[in-house]
Image (tube, rainbow, N blue to C red; front, side):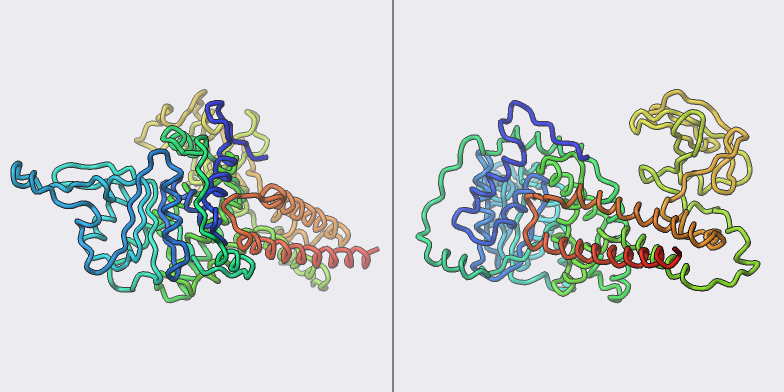
Length: 531
């Protein structure tokens, strides 16, 4: 069960209720822009930037103007770019008096971008190279070089807009990469919302309650606490899958970088997911936070369908692979097997660790170790040989686990940096299916799904035993999937997801459910046949 966010009595509202009420207030008189407003607020809290793609008159500038209002004493700066725009218009004019009297080249930044909390730049791709180069430093490092001085800018979010994407081969790739979130702002689609909009009297917004302002104290508290948010294993597995998917798509696309995701964007995406989880009242990133990245990882409008498919596939990848192996086992069960010497030979013992279950992403579990649950570094195991080496066993206070590592010759083991206590030297060497520790061989725990279905020895068992084993694997696979669905999607109320986002998930859940039913029917038929 996901940990809940602890709230302090100093703040009467939980982060989730606070954000929900702010989104409701900011959406007054605006139709079909609730998600863009919510995600813009998420970006501001996470310290990330946003790009809005859409035609004129679709409320892009309104998002930034209303976002500024929710920050206590917040300052904003907005500007419509053109090819004739100068740095003076964005960063402030040169101080003539300082240049004349002190021979200092400094800008008067009051009222301009360097001193703004919320920035909106329309038609950003029309800005000249001098403006774009300065923006790179301001966006990435929140630093503005003003003559000989370094200014740390208070900018929480930069929202850029355009009705087109950056032109290729014009050096805009670096600036484009700085906008983590990219959303499309279209005209109103619903007829009912459309007529409400054109009939609206344009009434003034209600005044924001004093308790809903985001003060510097609240903002700093949210940012600091959200950095402690962890990540579920289901999200880690989904990320592993989608990285492979993007690499494959990029290769098929001829390496045009349309599916390229830089390490910097991944790091920023993780920060965005942490913030989403925290503001939704959780201390673990779940798949609903991960799904938000569909608005971050497209580089070309034509690529969006493939990106959406990659995301939904990554969420269901583990269960679909498990079901595919079960289906294969059923087909093998129903196919007459010729008993050959090769089939009766025991399967090759594991030597590369591919069948070992991973824990905390970096360790294998040592089975039946007398000291209790003990974990062996997977990277050390990969470099281990059948020659005995020195190692160390210790208790990792940060991970709260007993860990075994090899000792690298010539490099002392730093217990302090490793959060280590109760150090004990051990002798270790590699063996099939595990490691020999102080002269005693120990096996590493294997992946549960593979042990019953992928082993060649399964084919030598009687049919009824094979069926029971397959049934067990099927039940485990379905139970793990249902647990994932329950913890991530049952009553999902992530305040940053739209109905369209959730529709993608619902379609994926339906497809998996149908696949499960198909396998279940096949298994039931097999059971009937062997009775």
